[in-house]
Length: 257
Image (cartoon, rainbow, N blue to C red):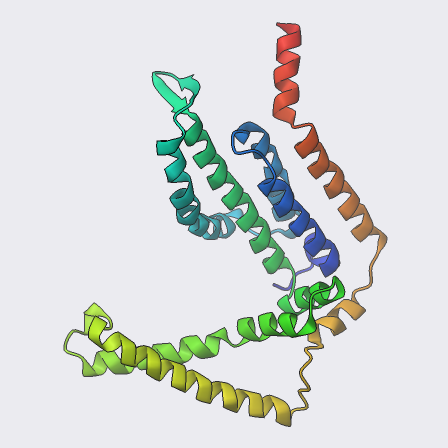
């Protein structure tokens, strides 16, 4: 998460504003306009180039959103059979196009969120959200959930290891008949661990506000490069949405035909 690249040096508020604007712009594209949607890949490609992050891990993690997008889009294939175009001997229907559009939107949106998280400390993002108007309690909930999710994973891992040591079917996981008691014990252990963590935080002066991100934002002042970055991204996103390059090329081809 730490780094000295131009993307890491940008103000957290600037990166958050651009990422949110990018996701809203991508979602606003019509389902049948896949060609124009592909132009919006400029944002994650540019951010990867500015941050120096290898594209492989980002792409692999973004693929995790594909099953959810395809689960929604597969229904369109059966319900929308309007003719689209011919790809060789295969007829591409409107449902196939909309399904592909949902997949592309999911990949672009998730990749933008991953790059934002990889180049910006989470506490700084929460502080930027608070300055943008999010309730402090909700931002604190996000921060605490992310910070102590490892505690829950540790408790579940320890319980699973103990269950496997006492079970004859060690490689089969938790049996269905034992799942209820397993989850109940996990909930009780999590409550107990959360109480101990909270007591430790109170002893160290925690008063309900997470100021670590605010301190980072105070140390990183808003500069001209942040404003320039937002303006350039806004112009490119607006141009890609209002005047998609694919449509312009198609019109130019029609003129010079």
